[in-house]
Image 1 (tube, rainbow, N blue to C red):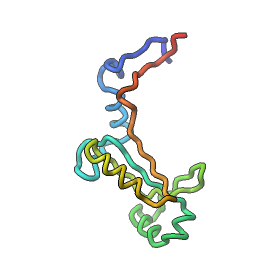
Image 2: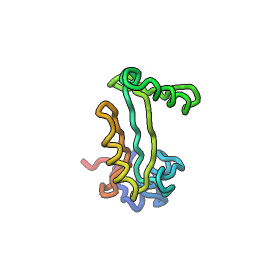
Image 3: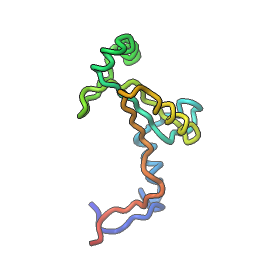
Amino acid sequence: MSDGKIIHVKKFAGGRETPQEMHARVAWAGRRCAACKGPPAIRIKVFAPVAELVQRSPQLMGVLAARAGGNLPVVPTTAGNMLKTSDLCFCALCAPTAERVAAKGPSWAIVEIDRGPDPTNRVATGYRG
């Protein structure tokens, strides 16, 4: 637990890494940019409702099942069962283009963008009341 001290960003994890570096190491685990193979800055996941895909594109479900080794990558959510159709990382240079392309997808698809912690936010632990 915290002893009430505020930890400066430069001293995060004993000064070994920044919160952004830790997030990249843990959440993106050795992945590279899908476009240029650079270090990742964002991760974009695209989900589609299973019922919507059955109705609109059953052949796409077959392609996704073949890509995933015969099993469909179904993720249960509060909005119902979703099928993960895409999961890619992009570097800081390719990220704006990737976000624009992801935003132009079908209206029934859900796009999740993970940018990691904001580098301008201060990292503070504990409470000084």
